[in-house]
Image (cartoon, rainbow, N blue to C red; front, side, top):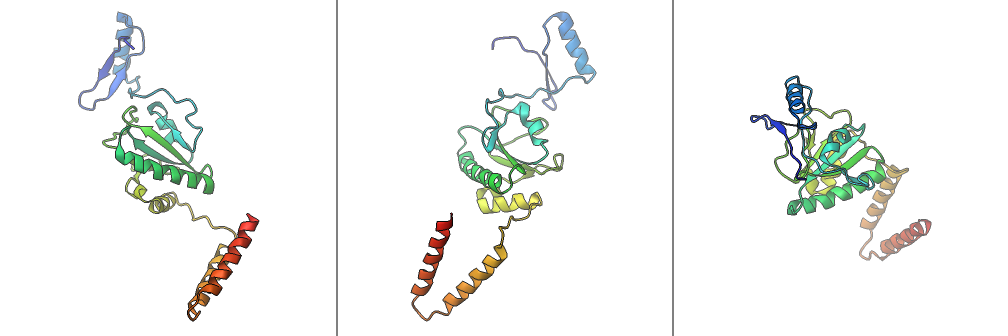
Length: 216
């Protein structure tokens, strides 16, 4: 914005500390003193918090929110992306569909967020490339976590399966799921015994489908 800015930078680690006070001799001296006494927090680049950032299933999180969001008492999935990244577009689509699935099947248990890492730095985490998908399981937010699920995100089934496994989440079964599976096996066995024409099986399936559709 054209205003002067002052930082203390550690060259070996690239840690930065931003001066937020006035630029008088006393203000700058106090800034240096606070740094020497370990009273300053590291500076991380961050976009402003987006209005309505949590309105959708996939939240739009910026750097200043990242730490608190990840520490939420829930399983947290983060999609790290940059604008103009072709690979990010494909991952985003699968990430969004997976988020919708967990929102319906496991409400409030798994949170999903997208972060533009070209514009936002993450506290104490170095991001070397995008896209990346990271999982922070509930109660396991520190090292050796997060879990990198970028490879699994290439296939929605693998992605959902790995999230369930990493978060110790059982596969949700509907009432009478086992009975349905047994009935389906009996039907398939009967179909295999039909001599040549599958018309009876087709007719029965169509009648059953129509009956179910009438109940929805």
